[in-house]
Image (cartoon, rainbow, N blue to C red):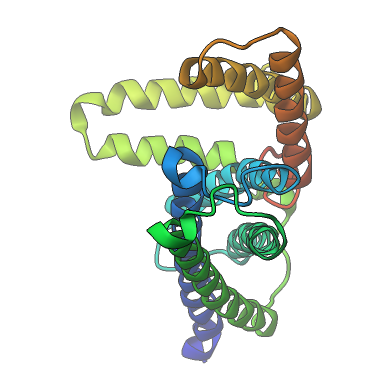
Length: 280
């Protein structure tokens, strides 16, 4: 009887971790495609999806992926024991699903640009740059398909092994997992363990009791984070690309970046449990 009770949970853990690992490979494959086609100038000059409207899809997809992958990665690393709680496994699968859907939509946009947009540099068909772009898209697509299949299998196993739902208030959020991960890491480095334990305990008390805790002001926290992201983008762009030519441009792009970050935050706040409500 004991073996039959533990089998479904063990299968759930194994299948969820396998889907998460495959999802991580798909994210890395897409990240390579993104970085090569946006950060290597000679390749970017040959990319047909470097202009709007395709560039908008790529840009907002990158914002969405950064938040989803960050939250899911923290949760997966924190809960790395031999068995996952059903609620935690479900959050991980949700994050993987969100990432794969985002990659799939972005790849579909890239492929449509290859098919219908003119090549910015016709020489790219002769010098191998177009072949490089197509190869990266194909590899990213393949890893996404494999990860999607494993995720579907993990979801089916979870559905068969579903038990009574745990009380939501007891489920950790990403901040809980991040602080726990910091303590786990400090435990491996004794000289800093005491200091990190004090810092994380102080952070725990602030999050639990302070009137200014992000958990008490989840919408306001998202707005502040979005504004900070917009300002950071403007500063980063000025450093990498040079000073802005006019005040209108940084305001426009800062607002667009902030709007994207806020939209992603609101879309993932509940499904990925970025911030839980304060406990009574």
